[in-house]
Length: 298
Image (cartoon, rainbow, N blue to C red; front, side, top):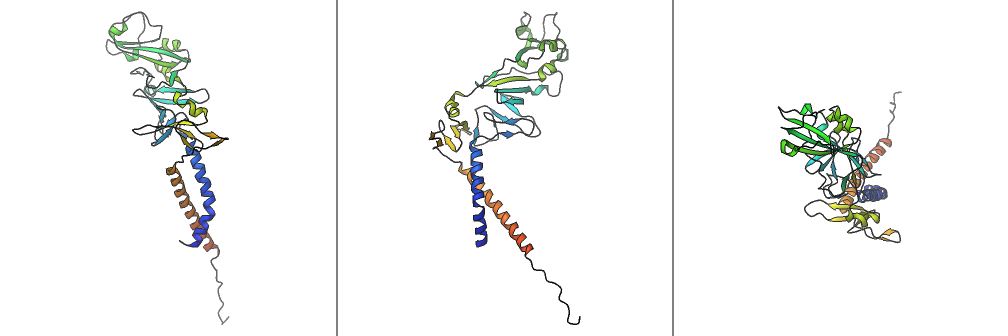
């Protein structure tokens, strides 16, 4: 390798070292992910394409791209994520069934049993749908857009259902939350789609297994794959329980060698490319220009 190239590489080594430290720090401290559709995924949520290790709580994986909505998977159902408020720990979700219709049918309950860290906020109202009832109280108006032959469907706020043996005469009963915005008036006008369109809000609490880690200034992470191992991700490495501090300085350091290697390799390519174009420019600048030599006859 030419000595001039080695000298140029030595010139760029401090920059490469800085880039390496920067990327290692970002990798260790859980950077947010911009979905490009108005939603930013940040801790304790994580992008599901993080294959080897994610920085966040189990079950808080979100999927997104520029074309499709950001979605959360709960109990075999996808919900679109409308907003995440990280300051008050709330998550606003929408029903995908409502997207392109004014008369949606929500097929099953919203089930939070798969995540003990999620719960409903006080700003929700619970609605109960009774689908395809063969017998029903005649004094209550059905959801006419859901009529199926002689079968009728109904919706009521939970606690306001008329006394009737709904389970005996309806094909299915579904209970779902909606954000409370004059729901009773909307239902009275038969605007089911409008009642569901604002979605519902959830709140999340800290994972008990992460308390020591987060109290020490770290972020919880779990490796993906068959064996999911908990780790506490600190500013300069990982620990099994919490960030170790001695005199204000972390003493536990387990760098991500794959990330470091990738950064160094990429930096070398950038440096080599810069070296090539710089030297090419020098050749162009110092290329001699020969004036036309007059002939002896002039």
